[in-house]
Image 1: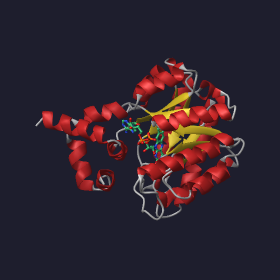
Image 2: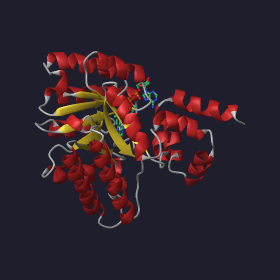
Image 3: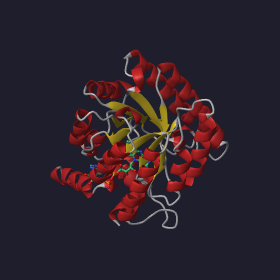
Image 4: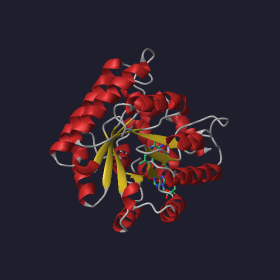
Length: 311
Ligand code: FDA
């Protein structure tokens, strides 16, 4: 209920103004966001990579309504990839980038899919030159078909383009079957957006069961699974499936968000697993922050406590 309310608030301009103008919000943002600039995120990425983790960097922003803005987002990624290559961080794919399709134009009223495909191809070309990869994030359910079409299209030239599947959608086990093929990089998450009941599973237990089912399909398949979860039970199931499917630790990876369960990121890396940390940066952090608050009541309580202590 609270989660639904928060995700509804995330679309309200009044709430956005109120929350982004409150100085204390900044402190909460810092926990989940590396900073405003590419230099900030490169500093964080250097730290994480030197600690043995992998990283995927997200330039914050979504629902772009202007083609010039979509092109500017693509240009930001190209410049970021050049900087990452210059610092040696892209070597062996240790640092890659994550891109939201609507940030590069998917939701534009005209030619959205074509604009997004062109911008994603520019980013993929820069990633290839830098020696690394791109993963397309998955946004709300209205964009899933178009995003999967984009993935299919861009993969013809850039077969290492990764994509995300969300276990809260009823369709996802079928998508996992289709994508569990050789060379395919699939990030599996539970799903962070609002979705109607007919399309999405409502109960957390159902979403978890679906995650475990999708996990099995991907781990038994021929692709490269990227398990994006902080859930100890899903991590334990992955470990057990890695054993029963005889997967070597280099053939899949765990992924977690910057600022969430750092102790577990450390533990898995120390145990020899690959752990990629998803690190966002940029000033357009509002939607991302609200999704993090909606995921966990304790994060919301932390935010409200910080607010109260200042007023
Ligand atoms: P769950 O929410 O059940 O949490 C399990 C435990 O993890 C909690 O009990 C808590 O200990 C910890 N935890 C989880 N979230 C936390 C938080 N915000 N703060 C502190 N602790 C937390 N979604 C999407 O729709 N499209 C996408 O493209 C992506 N991409 C993506 C990339 C990566 C690398 C990750 C890790 C996640 C995403 N997500 C996403 C978000 C994902 O769908 C989901 O909302 C969150 O990961 C939370 O789900 P968990 O699987 O962690 O389990």
